[in-house]
Length: 154
Image (cartoon, rainbow, N blue to C red; front, side):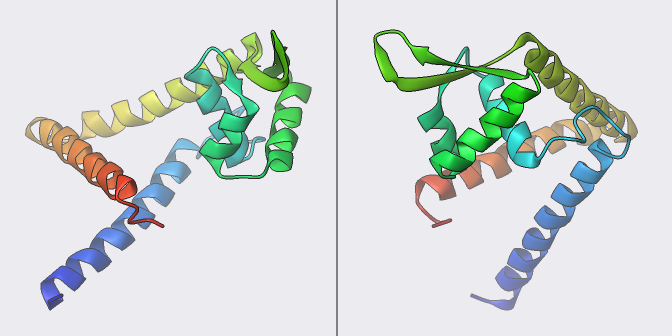
């Protein structure tokens, strides 16, 4: 690899770290009802929000954690009335989890907070840059997905 490629790699690495940290700090700058939840709990809520119900096994695989850790996460969400656990009909071994109504409300609040943050950033950007931002973000996402499929991150 030449110096230019190494420079590009170093800059992209640091930019990703800085961007992620800054975005999280910006979104969570103001006190919200989500502040009392861990990142892992929020990830579970987001997984549940994309499905009617999810197998516990799928949650552990999506987060890359042990069954006991997933159970602890779900127990805390159930205690806060954000999720519900039940057994699948016909197969008592399969444990399912779904969002409660309160959980759905919290997820909608999180999504709205992110939308407000993005709206503010888009409004402050130059109009001609907005489409470029979307195009580059999609390209970046595609590159990450391809790298993940190829096992680059292993």
